[in-house]
Amino acid sequence: AVHRTMLIISPTARISPLAHIEDSVRGTRIEIGDEVLIDSFVRINPSGGSGDLIISARCYINAGTVIYTGNGIFMGEGALIAANCTIAPTNHEYRLRSKTLLQQGFLPSKGGIRIGADAWIGANSVILDGADIGQGAIIGAGSVVSGVIEPYSINVGNPLRKIGERR
Picture 1: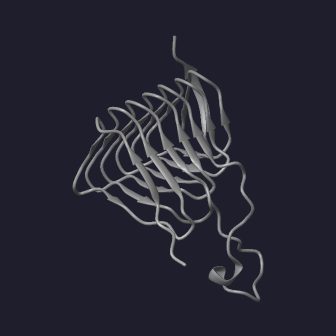
Picture 2: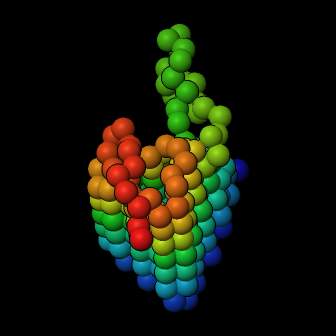
């Protein structure tokens, strides 16, 4: 039984014809809010879990970003995702040598991903399962995020470190 993605797109959202939203095998819900912009070559892949993807109003997702719905993603209003980011709220099980990675499936959820309103994710960043990025937080280009990020903080790198705060 193949389930279709429940896709709810605001009439004011703009999705590039070069973006790609795949169908789900689990009936994943994808909601795209008012005035959202999804640029060319953004790929939304409902895999790695049974979570939904909620993109609130006025979010921008720039070219080349890949989003796996995994254990669920919530993007608050006005969140900005720069080019070529990966947002992946899922992790492969890997511990058993006696089974291939594909045979082992996925690790239990760490809670999905939450990106707060007015947060900005810099280019080429990777956001992992369990990331909770506070409202207004900044993630510098090329960063890897897996934990709780304070609201309005400025964070960079891998490993991620706080370097300041928005005033």
